[in-house]
Image (cartoon, rainbow, N blue to C red):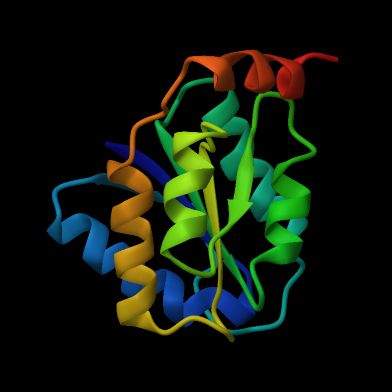
Length: 143
């Protein structure tokens, strides 16, 4: 899969860990930054990744900040994006199965590396269920 990966300073370490994990799993990862723990603003990084997802340049996005919340809010401002904060396996599975989420957001200050890798694996491997959920996703995506 083609995955756009980005973080802010608070998510940098977890982003780097996830990048290694995803590359080892055979994914094509586009690291959009950041490249250090130097303080920065997250919205431009979220917007870049979300734009790539929305236009189909990548299959999924993965965003990491301190909590995952800021990146999620910023990404969801881009039309066609359905970003979800992942805290546990239920979030990872249901965001894909029922909401066809195309961006996973994680918190570098609240989620450990091993747990994050498991959540990302579950997110990426869970198919969208379709059916009654398709109508709802269309409603989310309509303006």
